Image 1 (cartoon, rainbow, N blue to C red):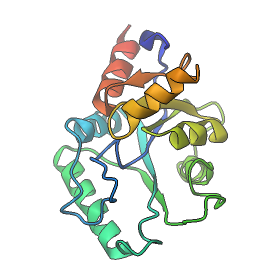
Image 2 (cartoon, rainbow, N blue to C red; image 1 turned 30 degrees about the vertical axis):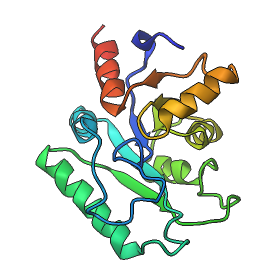
Image 3 (cartoon, helix red, strand yellow; image 1 turned 180 degrees about the vertical axis):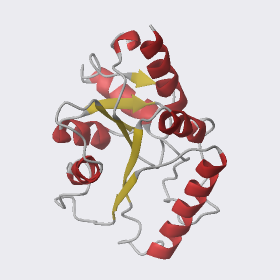
Image 4 (spheres, rainbow, N blue to C red; image 1 turned 90 degrees about the vertical axis):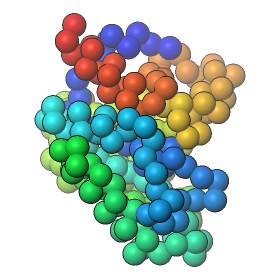
Length: 193
């Protein structure tokens, strides 16, 4: 594991959604009622956006192609998230989702398509400091495939992902935090040193 005091202040933080911002379910999050934020996650997003850090979300939403919910339900989930963030003076600057069931689809993580779209949409310079925060191995791979800095959180599937990475000796240079709030707190502390 790396020393968290060496974290660079970001220009952009891209977030996975399920398991990072909101609680995940093996049965998918299918409605705004089921969409429940993880404690501290929305406040962490507000902290970033209020500190002039751009925030993006890149989320696989395969449940749509499986017929478990539709685009309207997804829109309602995101409206709920945006409304709760607005109450905290927080903002998401870009949101990309991929409904494809096909693992070879360029936007479906671990492929980097969604991340690259967000980077382009927000006109990030070539030397920008960009993190992608996720809870799954596919998120770490997507970050690496997009050429951005991966961060793992232990919420959602993160604890199981951390165990697998440790067993495979692949966690050494990976920043790992209990949750999104912990990552943002470490960024803030690192920037004040």
